[in-house]
Length: 386
Image (cartoon, rainbow, N blue to C red; front, side, top):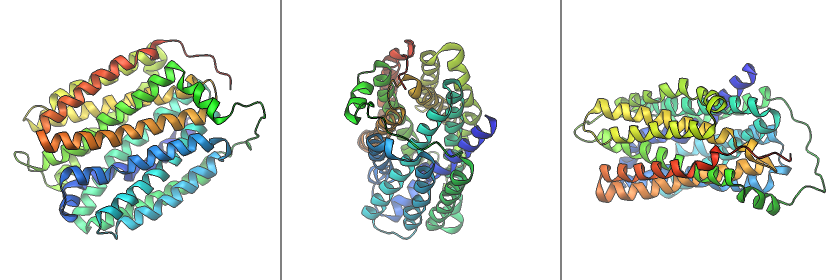
């Protein structure tokens, strides 16, 4: 299992590295495209729209898609819009390319979740998913550092071209390292896609999970999109390179996220989720201070809390699903990334109109709501009919 977990961690890193890297260079992109922070933030995070749409498509057609082939092919194709981002100077085209990136990243992500759910036992899947989220954490950290530093040293275009090479590396890892799955044979007795959707959407545990995914990325993406503008303005006035190093706040999450699976095993998913999002709430409180040290500590707490929460919720999707697991994964990721898109749009407007503190208060309210929504995670996992 160790080797499989390492492979899925590396795969996650190479799949999602360019999702958040562009956030570290938001101030430069805003100047380059001559627009306002909210518009640029929405353009950069348009990738989440593509991810939400792709999750829905995979949920519809998952039975026909070969998992391993779908993963490596998605990553190979991902390198195309990533490369093209280095050549555009029009915000609309930039936005559409980000949507294309998101669609391909989400396809790889959703199929990987399905692969893990189908190839691992429930206990193994929790550990493998924690490894996948850990790779996600590293992609956040390294992607932002790379984007900020390479944009400073070589210009914005080089950052995107470097990420394209990493996408191709991810395709190679998937092609060479993921064990081939058995050919999927359709059973005439299997429920239809719409019947499967109804089963999932009437499952209280999955209902809660879908909403929680929405709320987790709503909070995370909003914070780490617009805090860049706070840190680059007075009184902090950080340079793009200094801003990149702020994202070392993700480092603690590299070590804490793998523990999420163990916490679930010992205390249950509900307890683990509440502890995770309570830490995120404490981190949001720290963002209201004018101290750079406190703000950075708050960002670290939010990173730890939201990544652990994501590992907890996504890790139990396969066990909670009483029908097609891939469809459940697709629906979860659609909700998850749609939450990021809504968060980027809504909090961007709040931030532009009323300032940073107002944006943080809204995010605290959203975090509090997630603790209430999570109650069904305390119920026993339903018996699966896989």
